[in-house]
Length: 247
Length: 185
Image (cartoon, rainbow over all chains, first blue to last red; front, side, top):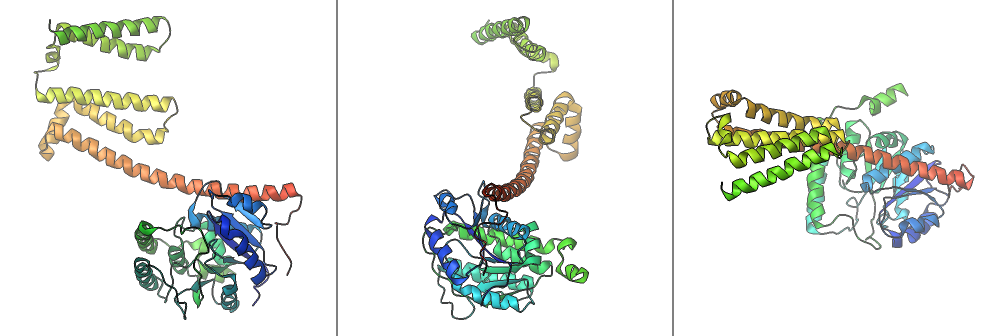
């Protein structure tokens, strides 16, 4: 299924020199005609040089902000350029562009603001370390409770968002490890989201940005953030219900 | 005259002489020269009359602690003011330091104040000073965490704006308003 008009693919990259060209080629094949914007989160390898020849729009962040900061820059760009939908693919090639069809299809039903590709819905066959899987399961349970909605893959960054959600994210998006908190914030602000099954790949090369101790820190940071976010007042400017009433 | 007294007097002469010399040759500021001159004079005096601190009161542990605290608060106050003066520190971050210095100074100058605290809380003067210092250090650390978070937030905003502006500039330099790679389906 082809994405709607005015859709952009946002790819945050950090030291993904080797993955860049194959990924772009794949996006070009699977989503022909869809513009791409790569957000280079101050990579230390040759990514910046590769980007010059990539033939697509790109943003070079002057200092490393974390994937959340990079995505926020991407959302700002997409809004400025007048796009209505953004699909996020990770720069390591974990999210196969061929799987975007499911996201686009779900978004086309028009009742949600954000669609996540979940590794754990359907027969994803995803495996990882035990610590990480336990962490994800715990997080999923906590987040499902916080959002009053079943969430199977809270850490998935394989997402498609529409313009209202982008508007909110361009204003407020966590800097590091943003995905679970972003869902919680969305639900708090009255946005709706859904998951669709998606097959992920092993990363194609390079190293994961989250290391072993990072997993523990990740869990801790996200749990604190989720808890505190529940105590935060709903921002009336970005309240989805309010936006609908005024539209 | 014992050897430490002689050393003290000799160093005091050097310090006093140096401060006077640099003051009259306009190499240093009045305040700085006065500060070092006073230290030099005190050292010379201490060389001849080691018991001179008894002028301040009977030589006791409390008096010694008061002297140390007074010196500490003096250092805190001068260093903070100097840092603000040469614009190495913003006033807002200096306030807590100044408050610490002033509170310590008050405690050193007015022993009755310290006695009142002692009778209220039951902790002795030396401990109370430590409590004050510790509490202010905690406050300052907290203040720094807040300031750091704010700075990081602003930094992220600036970085994003810069990246967007740079992309726009690249587009303008290429001479087309359209972003690169915008293909029509």
